[in-house]
Length: 352
Image 1 (spheres, helix red, strand yellow):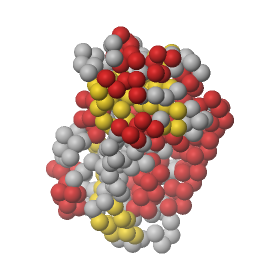
Image 2 (cartoon, rainbow, N blue to C red; image 1 turned 90 degrees about the horizontal axis):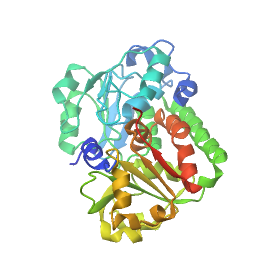
Image 3 (cartoon, helix red, strand yellow; image 1 turned 30 degrees about the vertical axis):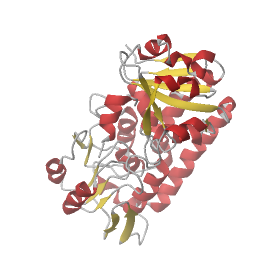
Image 4 (cartoon, helix red, strand yellow; image 1 turned 30 degrees about the horizontal axis):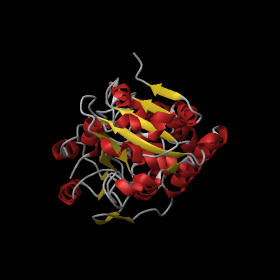
């Protein structure tokens, strides 16, 4: 099974404080998931969580939680559960292989950085086992059924609910809230996150109803195709929640169950939308796209309604949208989206 991190790095690639801090009112002093035990609902255990590979029973409140994927650690932390081990953020991460939004929340609750392992190309079973988890969260991952079975031998494991890598932040929150016994708190976090999104709509009314496409350029020298993200991907999911409308051509071209597809440059004129949001893997990718004879015919580019993002951490705020990253996305990127809708030609590049 294709792993998202590879696709993000290779195709995002194609692509690819804290609200929860104020919303969860989480752990007073947590240096491990064990320290946040008091946040669980009374009578929460035993609990059974359904997922793509069956169901997992958790008999008692977990005290050592490990995570796989690019957002499960965020969701757990937003509920006051500090993971003891988590996947390294190798694309868009900081020097600690973490993210600024995770670190800000971690500081808020007084927790320690989890052990980080690289799961870009394979699941590091040995390293996960060494962390001695009593729960493994992989609600937004691409683990295979064989991976799941091996992980489940280490500790009860909660996989994704539908297709790999296509889990919404709401579904992750619901599943992790249930698995950690924090259903009440997860509902509070969901409401406060949705309130933040609703406020962004009020602050930027021009984005509501605007049609959009999200594309990605991998290699400036190979512009025979362009990546196009579909409705199930986190990026379109986030933009749609803001009130924007994914252009119909995305549903036509991106196969069901996939989060993106490569589109031939010859189809550029068909990529009709009011605004284009392009994620460039390297600086200058969008300039190359604009100079390309075929891809420059994408209507939103011709009309000057586009946003090009080459800043990896900012791309990650909605590439792996979570209860911790969404406030950053809204504060740092939504104003640029609104400007692009208004007709601005916006480029957001990484800081020097």
